[in-house]
Image (tube, rainbow, N blue to C red):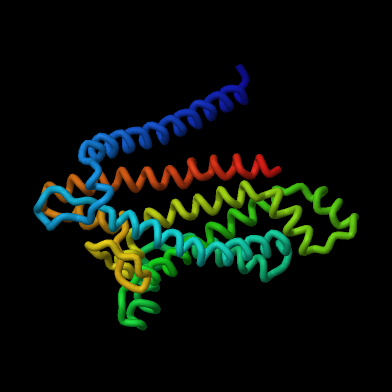
Length: 278
């Protein structure tokens, strides 16, 4: 057997082993969270706010509402900025300013979430002298934008240049080509990127600690402090009471279900809708 075949076989084994290790770690984590959290799930857990510290019962309805509201508002703020930045970079990839935008997006992706939280506290909470869910959404939007921009850019670059050239040959304007050819051809990829970005910010905790602060009551006003599942998990897991620690596992299980629903459930539904329209 030649040395090249030996190297190829060795690398194949190493790649397969790494894939199996990643899957095994994920399955073990999911298995533990499932069996630690599912036993405490009941109707009250989804429909009631938390009980008094030290007492059993109660739920995380306030945190579920907060997670949904904060994530949706952050996504609404970040989607146009992220998409337009990605479109600009994809259409002007050789320009210096486009390279600068790409560099800034990459740098912003690498900023730790706790730094984003401190930024939100300094420029929003401290300035307006109030914790609020809106401050949390704005802080999370800064984490949403770079991921959306980079995904949008990458999927637009995958659109065959022959499609755009054919549109230009028919006399279409650049704006029409971008919207009717590039964006529509890459709609499923852009949608998947948006859902991935939403799933990422839905599980962030550090920015919420500095901005949303948390609340034990169901709150719908975005200008007031609001709870969220990551915050509730942090508070319950840090509690010395077993009842709250048990609820932390259940809340973690619910949060993972929401993230999986965003990443896979909604992606499947939207891809089917786009396929029917096509």
